[in-house]
Length: 250
Length: 166
Image 1: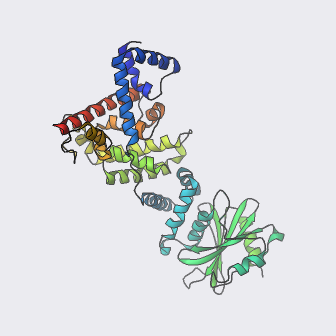
Image 2: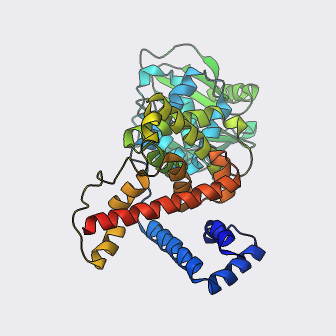
Image 3: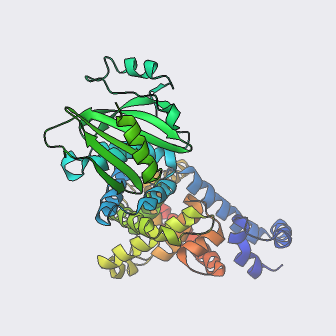
């Protein structure tokens, strides 16, 4: 190898991008040519200075949040039918970190901009994780779950045993729907998680039962005298209807 | 999310914290919309390519590109580096090389096409192949730009040190 070629290859050599044969030729040339060895030493010195210095700009605090807020806004603008996009954002983000950020992001939204079913879906999504839904009290026994709420919320949500209908009770958690405190009772049908959100009804809540598909999740919401409910799941609508009528049955 | 990598690249490309933020915002939205196009295992490379394009568009938009062309060795004698007062001993020169602020100034003074490959290689530690995909140039060009970029950087650092020794 001559010096002209060696100098042309020097950077690839420094970056370990040369094939093995050429790298060996470079080794030999550098061992026998002081000028090229000098150039190599300078290259190494530059590299070590660059690597040793704090040159990497870290993303400023708050940037992640505002990026996610932007994407959320964008997605709302593009209508709710793009549920897959949501998961794409999650994959892009590295699921856990984004999950955490999303919880905060949605809670930070003023309640008036989104309907209550949309807010319930947001909480449903925020509580999902690869390890399973977030559950504060895990039990398939409704006599364990119901008393757990005492002192945690100021109402007594209905916890029903629906195992005969195929819905397994996983547990419950304290959650929010918009700015309202809510509880989520968590059931499972096969691989599908069903959250039933319950919160104290406000006079402005829509009175009639309604069904919706938001971001690919089915939502059935209804009210009774003083409570509002929303069942959210990615299971079939007919299965969610079956669940809801079983849950609402006296 | 490769947000730190994205911001780092954007910050070095735009040389401005506010522009870098905007570029990351734009790029993330684009990446989000174009997610279907993403294929292959290198999600980070794909994402950085999107961020880089957002930077270029933003720079073009702000007419910074014309300005940037002037930003070469001759036009910038290094007077913009604050704090490069008189230093006389070799120890101080060594200390200066580890002064990140000073070093940043040297890298920022590189023309963009050299700066971006140096940043991708030295700070993001990407392979020639990955850089080639992000910057959309052949691998041979990655090699020659890195070579030239490092040469320019070394020369600038030398000039700066001599200047401060006088």
